Image 1: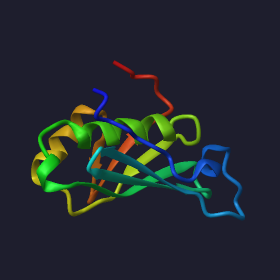
Image 2 (image 1 turned 60 degrees about the vertical axis):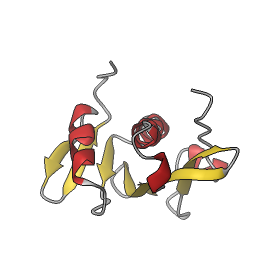
Image 3 (image 1 turned 135 degrees about the vertical axis):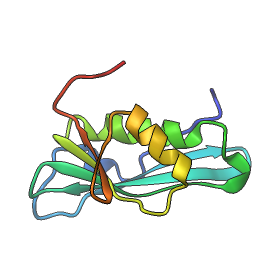
Image 4 (image 1 turned 90 degrees about the vertical axis):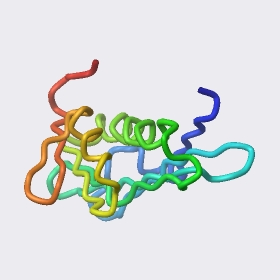
Length: 122
């Protein structure tokens, strides 16, 4: 469990968004060898939503739960800021879509959408 070290590199984006500023964060997982995975989250100020355009785990660290951890931390980051979380990374492995559905995302076209306004924490 100490393996996970998710750091938000752009702390300013934790604050309630300012429509004049583009807010993005990178949540990372690292160990003593360096970066293991990264997830980006971008605030969309026009409709109270956060988008995940990119989530990657290095091949040698796949299967350890890092992708799930990064996704859950992105959800936790987005919840106080937005009503909707949009997962828009089209290059994730096929098995990751099952994780998205288990985490409460619904497929709408090419996107996966999670309603953050409902309190469905397990």
